[in-house]
Length: 174
Image (cartoon, rainbow, N blue to C red; front, side, top):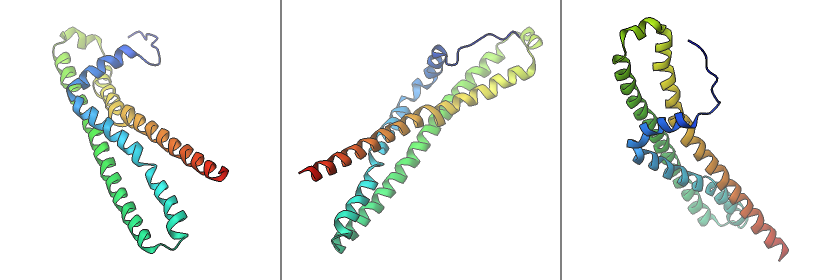
């Protein structure tokens, strides 16, 4: 089988793969919403810790220290539940797309002419039907959506960092 030179990234192929994800828009949108919420929640904990150290520990405000600790614990529990739901949703999205791809591939292979099996090595067919589809699963469950979520988290953390530095700088100037 002659090798053809392919580009590193094929947008037409990615568009075809995303057609298989179209029936699962709700799962995709849920994972995007969870990614946005997690990106916003992630920098809140360090901000609460700063507040705790600067205001409550420094001034021995024990009652508020207990309250802020309970808020921290609640925030950690909410964040953990959301991360679990996010991981579960993206994995379910990937597996759903893979199931549809495998069914379509099976139908395609079963419809091939027998001479096709004589010309094509069995290893090539096996590799294409198993490994390539698993790579597509990785795009959905471990690739695209989690990468977007991580980028959103980085942007939110940097935003909170710059906001905090700006706030402290203005307090020092005045």
